[in-house]
Image 1: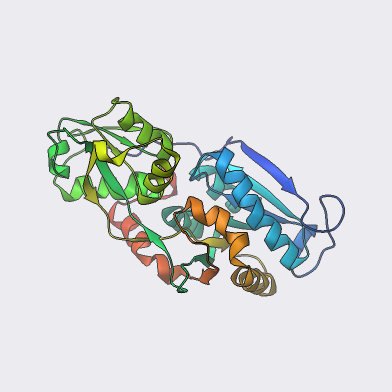
Image 2: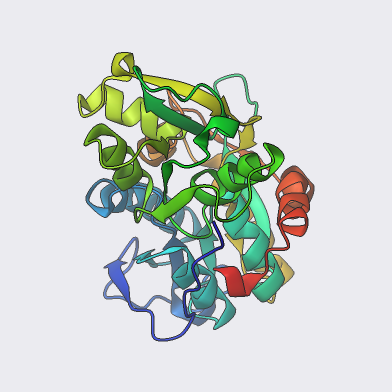
Length: 300
C-alpha cells in the first residue's frame, strides 16, 4: 500500500502546439502573452485520445480571449505535470486536486478557476471502491487478504483517498495486495476483467464508462465512497506577474459554456456550464489529506 516511487526527472511529455491567434507558433509579447505564447499543461486524468481534443477546445478559446497562441501539453503522468510547472515549462495547468497540492508546494501554483454547474456552483466528484456483485466483500475492512487495483500514484481519487479509506478501516500495509493499474480506465478494466478482487472507480470514470458501454454497474457493487471532492482546478504558476494572473483568471471565467463543455464532460460536468472562481482554500481538505498521509512531492 506504500506509494510507488516515481522519479521526477527524465519524464517525457507529448506536446501539441496550437496557434490560437496570429501566424506561426509565436505571438507578440505582452502582459497577457509572456514570451509570445502560453504553455498550458493538463494531467492525464482520461485517455489522451479523448482528453487531447477536449482540452484543445479550451486552450484555443483561452488563446482567442488573450490574443496569444497556446501550446497544449497532455503529460504522461501526474508527476510530469508538476515537474514541468516547477521547471518553468508550463505557465498554466489543470491538476487533480491532490496534484494541485504538490504543484503549489513545488511551483507555487495558484488555483484560478474550476468547473461549475448550471447554477454557478463548483462541481464535485467522489472516489469509490467497487467489487463484483457476487463478491464476499461488503466493506473496506473485508478487503484484508484481497487484491485492490488503484489508478495512478498521486491521484486524488485513484490513490490517496482509497488508501486513506484502508487506513481508516484499520488495515495495514501488507493486509491488502495493492497494485497501480496506470490510470482510472485501467483500474476499472482490471475489475471488469476479473484480474483483481476490487478496484477504485471514481464517479467521473463510472459515468464515462457506463455511457460508452464498457462497464455495466449492475454486475458490481460499491463498498466505499468518499466525501465530495472539488473538481480539478485550472492554475497559474506563482511567479508570473499579477497582471498576467488577473488576465488569465478573467479570461477563464468569461469563457462560454460550449468552449468549456468538452473537457468538462470528461469530468462528469453535464450539461456544460461556465467556469467558476476557486482559490487555495477551496482545496484545503486535500492539503489536510496530504499532511495526514504524510505525502510529499517525493511520493509522486
